[in-house]
Length: 207
Image (cartoon, rainbow, N blue to C red):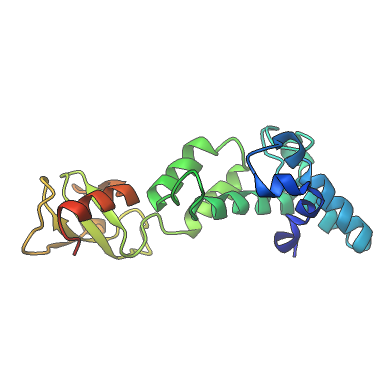
């Protein structure tokens, strides 16, 4: 319920801000306050709901808004919703960037976001999604490029990969399949970005 209503405060933002989201950033940071006020008025019997919505953008290290709360001052529901809100934003295209790949997402949450969210939530998130998804293109440490054809539930970082391109990015005639969970000497060095796939498609057909 809180997830559905966490942006209800947007209703109180000026129309000009809705037309140009890049403007009026200080005022936009007040939307959790507005949302909490709306919910307090509409459903006063659900105090936890208003509290959660008001704290969704607070962060574990105090870098969030609107109050700059940290650690135990933030309710658990808001912490969970906060990390999922960032996760949802990462996996979808935005005007200024493409959606992150599983590899980029893992990197963001193990390095860039470790201080923003509670460690147990970061751990649960990482364990709950596949780093490399079915049909995702990846590069191995041999510099060969392939496509994930099967996700290994026992080791999400080591899927079954079908090799499609050699080191020079030329299509291979025999598509060797490598189970990385059984081949410790081989590993994925990076996921292929959307832009890289477009460039490859322009120079060669993608299988």
